[in-house]
Length: 412
Image 1 (cartoon, rainbow, N blue to C red):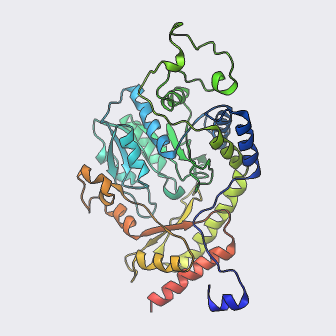
Image 2 (spheres, rainbow, N blue to C red):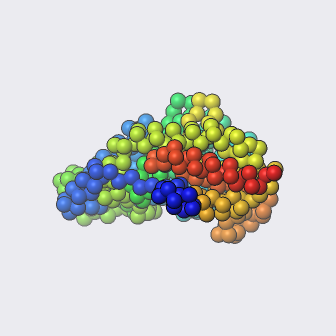
């Protein structure tokens, strides 16, 4: 707190990165779930899936335990359609590391492609050079809610007979040419982590328009069981299941395992929080979109030293966060700037890394620094701050003033 603030008794301004949204409806539903003594995946999970699918505009949604599992299980669906372990999935070099981890978790090989600096997303002009006879899928990421170039990506996929899986972890509310993120490929994987617009605290969800994909996903999330109805009467109502012994009296369908699966179910408590969160979705989205728009407009004055991303034609960015990219002409580093902001109450996060060349865990793949120059540049020079619904204009203006003060000291 400054001397002036102490004298005036004012609360110091801080700009926290995230917030937590658990409303009264969520709390009431959590208590209802606890009172029911049924807390594993059941009727509230199914209700959340139905509501989420309707919101996105997809025919199906399958809720899971995390956004990483959403990526991994969407990929694992491919085994039912002829894919083999070790086959390749093309992903952008720049993303939160969960994208690359999920490919490995599903048993595939990540093939990385550099990004465009001005969008932070995979460069569609570089995709086809990475396609081989082992490529099975493209997994574009809508990073920080900015939609990837889906028309070009889908054309490439169609030409090479590939599946497209959107990594929409941060893309709640994103729109591309009149369609929502989550409906732009064959499947889409969302995160429902606490920092995201729609949250179940932990959790993920896959959307698709294909019923067969959804059935496989329901099997995969529960160890590969043959039991994969969209609404399990055993789990939701403890009722009689006519299919239970369809394989014979000694073969309970719940213990017939058709494929290698995972343990990735969402539970009823998470679904209860998610359902409550959905009831506030449009108001949360509007406030976050307003914050993002305000910062994007006011930030233009900091060029050419600092830039951010902007929505393209017929596009809406999902207001997940506000990215900042320090330009080559800036006489300071990211560490200089983020240290200044943090000391002055503005929380920051780095803007991820080039997974194959800046994440030590991926060293075994054999890539070298310089292989993905744009992703590496962002990994060294990008950061982001929050735009969440609890930030008011006072906090946004404080961030902008802090940036201006920092620049005035560095640029003379």
